[in-house]
Image (cartoon, rainbow, N blue to C red; front, side, top):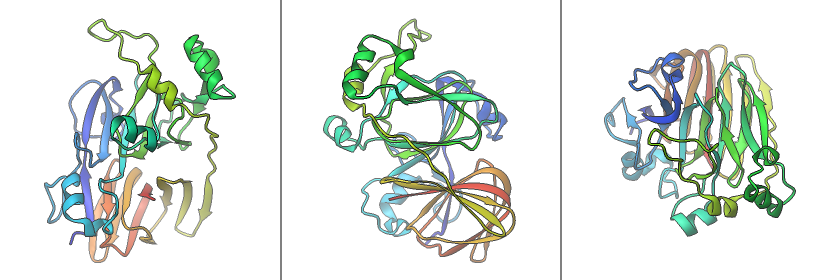
Length: 312
């Protein structure tokens, strides 16, 4: 069966989207407000399409369903992760996502824990958590609409990383360009939207009561573990109950071993080659692919940076 699945995703227009997916990744796309690129997705709404090999033209949702051996015959009924790039030309709404228990009970869905790898060179910021000692205090500040008092704003720069567990109040703000790896869920509860008016003169729907229920006072900490080798540097970004994420900064030909049933790969800098057995695949910034359970060893060659993830 097929060892490497090279993927083409879907571009989504958003009222807060911009043009950086064209200018910084050279994607050939139309539209003025492209906010998201769903690069590795088996979601019903926007599944990725394979562009190489015997499975060329098939979507990831069907491949996961029909070729379970490629994914180590996982116990997950649905493909568990979603990988995106987000371009925020304007502030996104203040949001919170439910955990698995709440999402299953109310929405018949997975919850949504996610993480952000910051790609933008320019200075920007995010909302990351709240100034509240407990949930009661948080709800009081929400009811009184004391947003400046409630929300924690954090400056961000390129190569910063943030794990955003379900229940964390958060927002991506203007100027951010982000690689997002998350549970495969499109659930978002909108807590506050700056009283903005859309093109039809209406404010977007809020989900206040669900947001209040979903909020957790999470302990938020992000520690990177860096290992340096002759041909590359490896940075462990997170290993949580839902997924693991690591970054490889490749300087020259590097041999790696697949240690999980399958691996999701995002090329975020440079260009070079992926080599699996006797096959060579040219890769460059903006490429996304999956190394299936058919792969044993694999090589990266060139000056490239790859963010690799897998589910737990």
